Length: 349
Image (tube, rainbow, N blue to C red):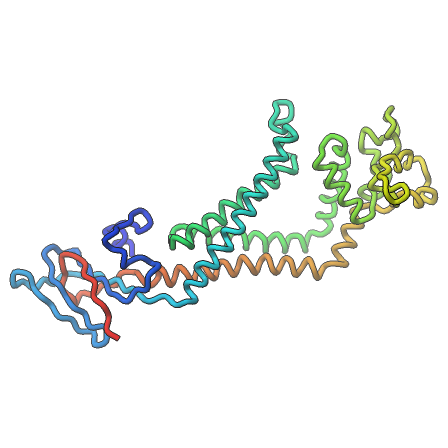
């Protein structure tokens, strides 16, 4: 294979209009016989009997090593898998670009690249969207171009990265199952950090509000955790002192229509018996644990589907590599004399 490509050149770096019959998009039923010897012979090969006929140049019958490249007709399944892989990767490429654009829009709208904020950009939630969108777009674009151009280099790169991602995800799942207590500690630390920056970062505020609203919880372990926020701390001189956000309220709507942003004011001064009629007392860490227990079937199904899609992509890529390139490797045949140039000989059926 290596000797053939070095002698002929890599197919994705050149295009010869005179050899359109070699296009991987066309059915192939030919044998290409090539030799490194100069002044070789023209031969006709009978694929059924294995014999060959030789026409000599200048009455000489040259005996030199010969390389045979065999092309086979592709089935409709091969074409289906090719365009299926192309369309799926194209869709995920567009999705990745959308996620990347959303993350960049968030960073720019918050002026995260300003000189006074550039130091804390590493903890910005929008950076996660930017990273995921970029990686997804580049990976899927590699598979997309590799499939439509039948580029073995890109397809191998695509399948290799997928195998690495599958391995990493399996290892993460195993570690998450075996380190549940440590994960709960990390979640608590992250929740407290988000609560501390609640008023200063719109993304952290949005994430915290969504968690508290959907899980009907308040704080990390209890509603008094909001003392970690300088604005809701009881020592704060502002109007929010000893309060909680409106998303902690049992009924944040006045008359069911108007959002009451002050429904949590002074809630930390109340005892639990009095506060339970106004705000949620339970913390969000316990709410997250209960949600996972109640929906572990859904979580497992999503994980299996995501992992299955990646494994399916690897199998499809492997099938394409075998059919488009695995059958085109040169085979040495010392019994056939060398020729000066390749000749296409149609196989007999």
